[in-house]
Image (tube, rainbow, N blue to C red; front, top):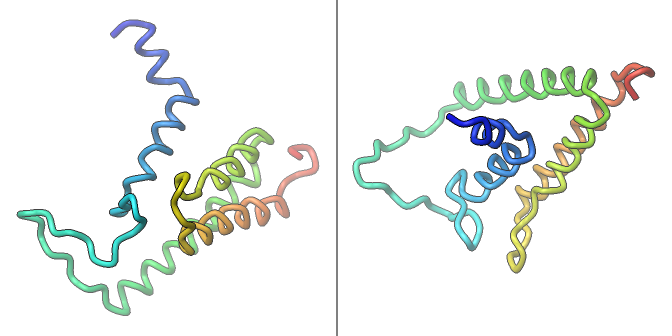
Length: 126
């Protein structure tokens, strides 16, 4: 692998743009937004319904991850905090498409996590 290819593969801006580009099609997103029922892929195993225990377990894991993220953001550099805000601002429908409530809530939640982390930041890191 050449040095140019290696530099390109490790360029933070290119890596971030590639990650953000994947958001457009993750979770079954379609040009008209999320679909009510996902289309079945031939040979795909059906997913079982999540019971109350699985939902509760996921809820606990999300709370733990949010608190871990707040901890990491509290010690992050000013630039990293700024990038987190930029990522939240990036969550928006593509031009010409309507806002989706979950998308709007996700962006607001990201901003809230950054704001909550600022309560734990040291005076020196601000």
